[in-house]
Image 1: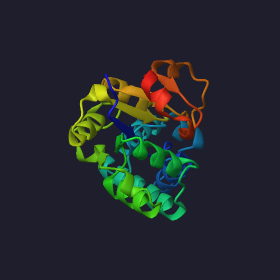
Image 2: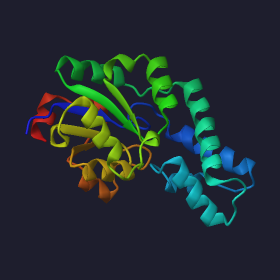
Image 3: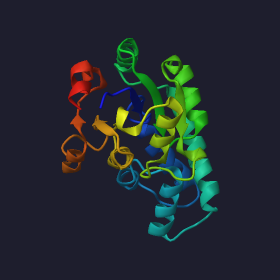
Image 4: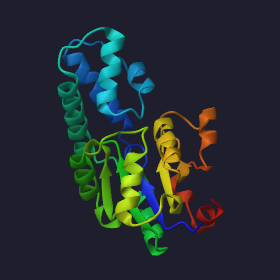
Length: 218
């Protein structure tokens, strides 16, 4: 089936935000007496804020705030850091320009809140490339559930089989595959040698490697 749309995760794919999410997690949870470490946050890569809070509460047997409230504080701190740094990954604009010229519809499907999706795409000057920003925080389920990808495809007016989802995390890759989409992974902070990447249809070292030939092969 012909690919008609390319849907991007944001954190770790379009912006180098994973270190900032981890910094925000450590600082937020430490502020409320939970001794979260960098290793803790690394192990939770790709998990939405509410899931992170739930798992850390269970690990440390502490619950200083309701989970939803802690997740909101974590999200807001991370958003502030990311919007301050604007860590757009090298090659993103060139890739989006190339895919636009090739006629593909494009969207973002992210576990992050809409305020971050809108803020970072506008501040980094890439908002014009995307028809739709799909935030799982507005839906019934977050990743690894496929709803955020299916929602993006629906708004774009394409079948899930006509889409490629691009991810950098294992959780995200599982989410794309559960949506019955082709999956390209650009391994981020987890590293390229994890055997679980074999689930993806294609593994690249950079977004700049994406071209018409690779897309047609999927």
